[in-house]
Image (cartoon, rainbow, N blue to C red; front, side, top):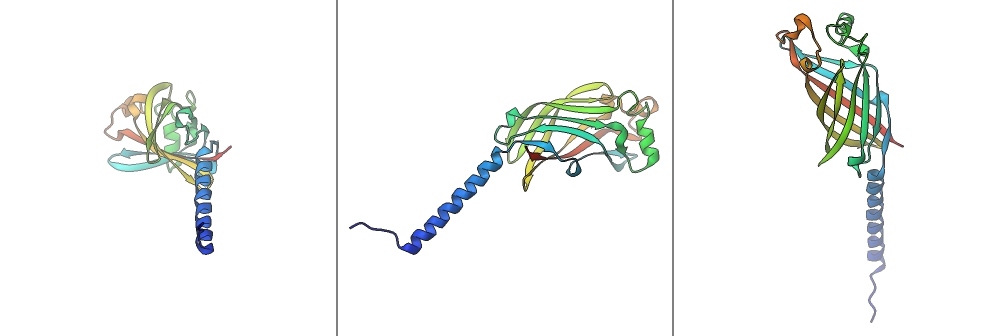
Length: 197
């Protein structure tokens, strides 16, 4: 005798299978997305440092980003970020004017800081290492940026921070070469949001 599932059990099984397949389809679709359209209003680049032992924060109002990232093929990713240094926001007009001078960023000769990636390595658990070159004030250094990629709806978000030494880029010359007032260590923090193409 041929056995068949009771109608209620068959219906339940069918609904469950449909749900699983729909979930798999959504997961596959999300991983297949290539994020390229940077959303400036949802992105931010800031920095932190110590001045006379006190933690200070700042940010940049204007920067341009180009991004191409597919979570399913991270090795093919590429990113560039160009920061307009004169757009610095230290929290005061005097501070903004001071860091734009030749002693610090020298924005008249070096208006833009630039990062360009050369390789992206997946570490698992939404974490990545982004290797590339960072250029500030005419000096280029190889850096490896730890980052985390998550999604917020249909938007992909890269977040992370990079520690640099300001002395490596001649940020602070003359009397400011010493690190007794302004520390050598600076942390760059970023959030780059992008929509799929």
